[in-house]
Image 1 (spheres, rainbow, N blue to C red):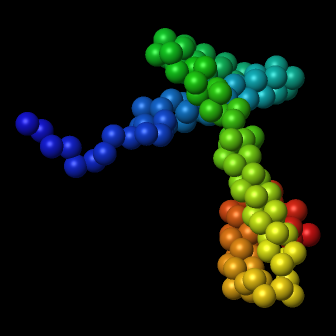
Image 2 (cartoon, helix red, strand yellow):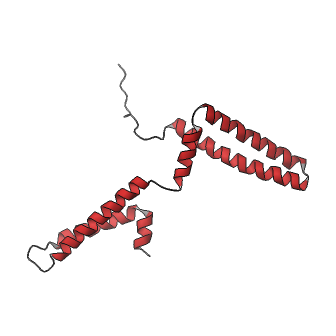
Image 3 (cartoon, rainbow, N blue to C red):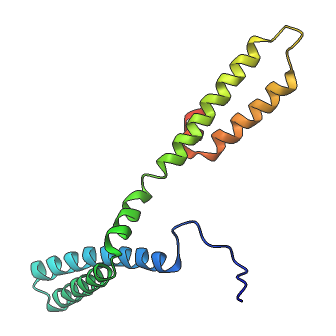
Length: 145
């Protein structure tokens, strides 16, 4: 009986997927370099530049084919495209939490001046709001302008 000391991974960042994503970034870089060098070599009539560009394009084509054969081209492209977008579900959850905390704060502030008002609850709520804002760069920029 084998005892696994590591719990099963629930995220999608296995080493194989990370390698595929790195290969995809390399493919994009080789495409850009290859096109630039090929065009530059053709414009300057420089055989070395033209050869280097052709070689970079060939490497890019091979990496793309390798990723495609392994079925990792589309997932790597989607992961690359999602990098700039962030995680919308997580960001929406933070925004929902912030709205909930702000509503709760408003409810507590309406009790100000009455005997059932709890200033420590308001302080704790303000702390939670600050933590929620600080966890999101977009919310932090909005609140700290």
